[in-house]
Image (cartoon, rainbow, N blue to C red; front, side, top):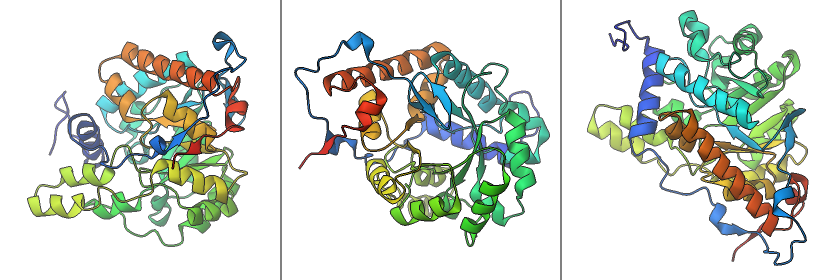
Length: 349
């Protein structure tokens, strides 16, 4: 049995979380295909008729005000080391005025001693906070009561249900039955007291899936497309036998690039708030995503790497992204986030 740094036994779920965290930081798990934002460009305005210092990046999401349209995407929890990172990231989110999501709370539901690894309200009392559970667990005994428990566990403002069929298929311990989930998601949307957001974990949301989710009553969609961390690569590197590694690596480029998923989802469900995550590398990517229909833009790997060094590197990173967003808005002639959304970038032919 695996032991933690203090010599205590580590559960199988906690060990998987530690594996994911370690591989995300140490291994080559980034997608070899990009998110596609390089295919889009804003029309440059040489006379923007704006003062850069008055550019307004504030917005709101699900009724909660934010200083920036940024989200530290759902990544981790369920192991002691992950808890330290969650608190560090949440503290920065509170300071900067952005949204924050924890990783899958399944470990916290089954192991109460792991719940503190998700609990960040003590350092982030005002942050827009997302709980997180795997939608597939609705086919393995999870009910409204467990979803409520996850929400109450961290004092969340919304629940993220993540869809990860490829990851589950590649996990030796994966859950494979995704049949009938849309009806069960619809039930949760009706029964929970907080909004339900559905996201992928790096393979993107298709037009068909977006329509199904809109009919089911979800409050928002995170397209979470191809271009960032590849969970096919993560799961491949968790395998021990070389032939199994190669089998999984064949799916390294599977999915819909984030920019394409965003366009498709916005077309399929124009009334729904959207989050763009997966392979956004800087504030200019965020600006393009907003112009293409996103209301919030998520960052994961870059902030995780910075958080491994401390709070200040995360703050500097996000400050840099905010500066890039303001410059993009300034040169595109957009004084506000609403104006940026009204003047989308065009695809470069």
